[in-house]
Image (cartoon, rainbow, N blue to C red; front, side):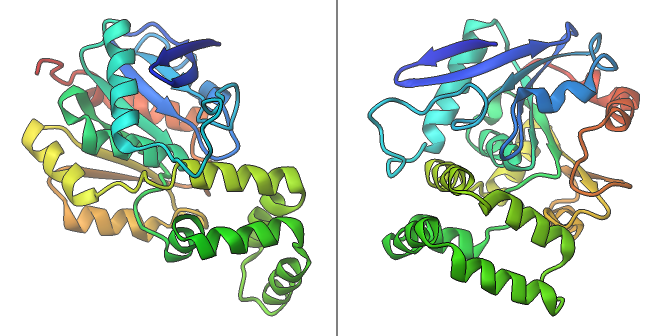
Length: 278
């Protein structure tokens, strides 16, 4: 692991592979750069993958003295990644994101399109805006409600258990919610990640317009049985921007970063022969 600093922001990262095409990659919630290990060694000679730990995950630390009530702005992410690319002599790169990391990749597609080769979106967050997420993270009353939940989660668990018992919450969703809120440390992680990234709400229309103007594409890889990021959300984007969106449906659930995906990517020659000139 290495650390890159630009201004007040520091981000931990590691490099995998040695191919001629560069990829900036962001992992899913609760993960780390290790999430992308299944893509190698299949892609090692095709791409150089620069994998980043999202703040509060892995080795990346939020700026000291900056409360999460002062969240990361899209422009800060843009400037951080542009500076990283300049430092490492990268002219253009794919923006890759799995799950939560998809929100960062789409933010870059919107705010740093001139350095993009396109976006590789793996079961990505950011395809829809969840009202409950906005309420809990953006408004003072929502944040206060979550703080109460952190200290007294009993009523929440009782309600969740009841909804699961009558079939209103599916087993996979139930297990996902239970796991990420089952102890105070996990609830704190949810709080910190949600608040620190709450301004990263990509505008898909703007991102698609930039892809159209620069001749790049949004490449979606989604699981048919994914109960976290629904396949229908990807199909909706495909309908709205068919000229700049590719959708590949994988016979998986939410965990799509697998050796099988690596083989699929390796076989997609059009991805790696893309014109890297401005």
